[in-house]
Length: 224
Image 1 (tube, rainbow, N blue to C red):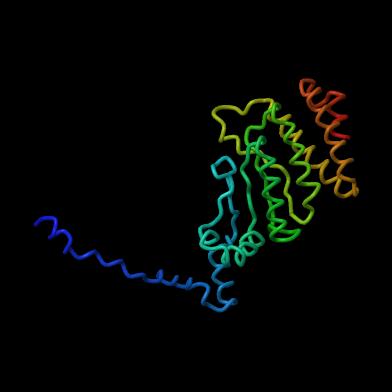
Image 2 (image 1 turned 90 degrees about the horizontal axis):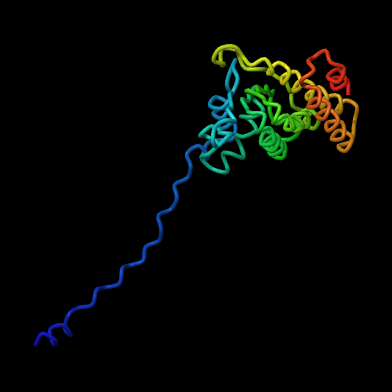
């Protein structure tokens, strides 16, 4: 009897197929382009101040949440954000290649002048990372459309006690690298010539860092 009862049990009906719910349109994208641009500028452009990007963080280059809403909004609003703001980049010297790469991506997206201005503040440079100053020089060499400001050192109160004495020489070397990059751009040097000069400069800096600012080798590095 039990077996017969099982045979008479009704099979479960297959679930009825329903189409997935339609995606609701982004309300912002339903507005006229002119109004969207006004909203982008109001949200993304910082008035009378700098946009501070800390490349010590992970991820090193964080963007405003609005640019992460959708690819369409990002494509429309990125140029307003970058071209409308003055940026201060806080960075380790060892991460200069990452800054170089990010600037190249911005230029590919936004043209030769991707940002309004760029200030670079390099924290605690070490001689062991001075080879990365070649990337800094190449930024000044390649990106002439960017208003690149002089290299700045962090305020002394960021240090516990007195800043190490060798930092002064390191910052002078970084300024030399930036000036060399600008000189190469102004002189129309080829990339090969620029890189060769940077290698000469780096060798002179590293071999004469212990002689002080008045040493003959250091002065040669400044004049290369």
